Image 1 (cartoon, rainbow, N blue to C red):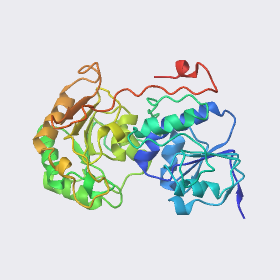
Image 2: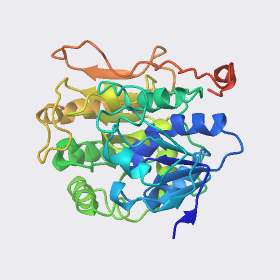
Image 3: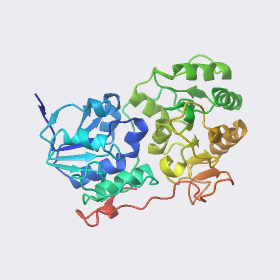
Image 4: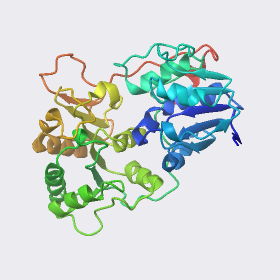
Length: 355
């Protein structure tokens, strides 16, 4: 028997970075639908951070598209999960009063805007909710301080893991950077999820970081958020940890490999330095991407030292650093300030949004 559900159900049954890139769209829905109960269908481990955004009322535990529970009644379902058709059909099974999603030829009864595969992930979902009439600001990425203490305030945080090997910079290079920063007098810690403890342990051991530096597998999601919020610097690949650094405007050095930063990178801000050699590849590959391997240890260390020595907001008044190889052909050096997306339901709302 189906449980009684919310007025609005939003599907985003993906990972940490996926949740954080959808925050501006979720907040647009929250502002545009005052008084409506808004439920997010997402993996249960992300619930504390999802609630911290202030955009949703509750989380419906949904590990993946096959795990969407029977739930209803739903007056409006919004697909922030993907282009379809599988995610469309998963939501159709709930028999919502209305389903809002990107158009897909295999689900012609669902009307919506066209999918743009070259669009930045944040802009994509803002555009979708704007089609519902709700103003969306892609720069509305920030999170409030988490209600937890950081396990290592003021530390340099290295995160060697990533969802697929194609996006994992070599462990020995992370270790070399960690050792060099430790030699400069920095406190260096290493993070990782439950499946990444081996990577983190190896980095900490190779770098000689000592007891207590390996925080992998031992922090809750809110403790991890507190760690990133209070870090002196974050160094990681194209991962959810990088999006946490964006959410807290924590200085970061971000290593991009097969996926270009104009699809998943941070907005242009002085706090974030993106390293990318201009290659594109398979982000789900089983080996480190050749472009990622072209990013040398020296380049990462130079970027890290530069960020550590630069007062926040004082270095680059025009935007983030993007260390892009001259071999890049498309000439787009990172993620420009994405324009706000006006809807039709609330004229002038964007002018009142906090920056």
